[in-house]
Picture 1 (tube, rainbow, N blue to C red):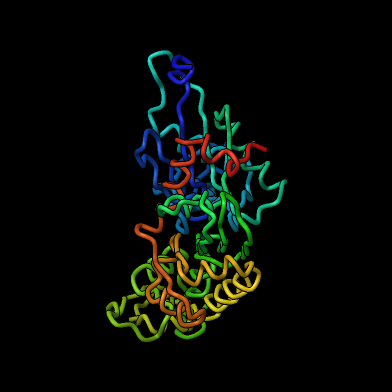
Picture 2 (picture 1 turned 120 degrees about the horizontal axis):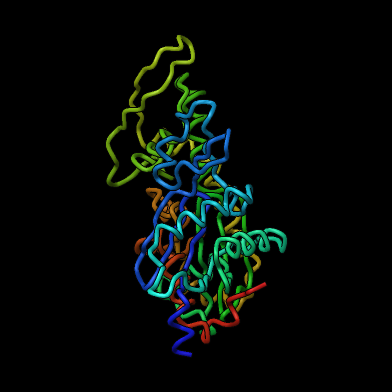
Length: 342
């Protein structure tokens, strides 16, 4: 068994719509945007991750940037495979005796279909994975923030990623009830682009909208510690000339209101579907927010006022899922009922 372990390298992968994170030997070795740049003519991969992100929205006709995942699942099989392979090459997994066997645990949305699940597994296998396991995202997030999922105590996780929002009630190593909606970070970005066009006659790109979301993104129009107004550059739709305007967090809260309301509705629906004994537990434990969307200013307060329950933002919510995936990979015996290989 010792010799077998020597030739086997273990990777915990959070294959997200917006970002891909990989933990190898208990270290976060890849934290890159899930994007790839390809030459249209010869199909050669020009860049992946942050290098490809720099090209996004700025390419000429010979270069194409692709985000292979949409709504948490693989939309472009070939590009996903090339991207995963590229990220694995970034890690020095080669040993003295050449390329090792790769054992991977990849997290997947809880509402994924069997076909979508198979696409993730096949992409991982064709990227060098000899043993590939999958774990539902809310379960990985719960493990990652330190919840003992094997206990008969109910906990609710709200994981807001790039493509999907996963809401799950977890107890006894299983998901008792869950709600998965395709409203998340990407929708927030689209909302901001639409708002700037509608309200300010300003055309902005995806990357600019992302920066706005990070700098002044908010879920409430009144915050205790508000961020300063943010300068936004774009193209004036009336004149066609580049211009700059200042945007406040309360404007962005207004722009995101509809999407956040959909997330609130999904949380309420998940609470309605929860068995009464677990509802009693959740009243005590509260709700846990993870994923990039958890960083939206005032979101915890907004969900708390809607549900009348305490809401906690996880420490380092962006990495909660990949941390939980790595813990499950280290201790497959404890989490064998959670991990699926089919």
